[in-house]
Length: 95
Image 1 (cartoon, rainbow, N blue to C red):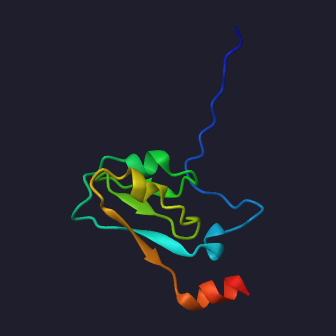
Image 2 (tube, one colour):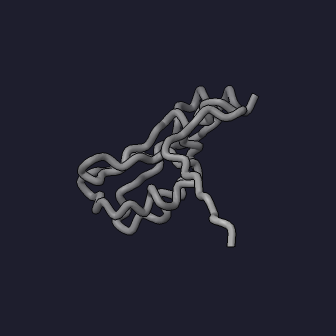
């Protein structure tokens, strides 16, 4: 049987869309007082834009987060909330 190679993306990279946060309407915000460091947000982030620091706390790379809020939905401690982006940006995106 042939050996199967797995290539992990360990940090966001520029794709053809570039920094994808430019078309986001909301972003996740982590309350570190509530965070239990379970890493569920990191595990389920489809864009791999959450990094875990040496103390196991998650940090979101706002340049690549699309604002899907999956991280908030899977957080068992409800430590991630949704923050609406600047209304001016939303109006410009709708134009």
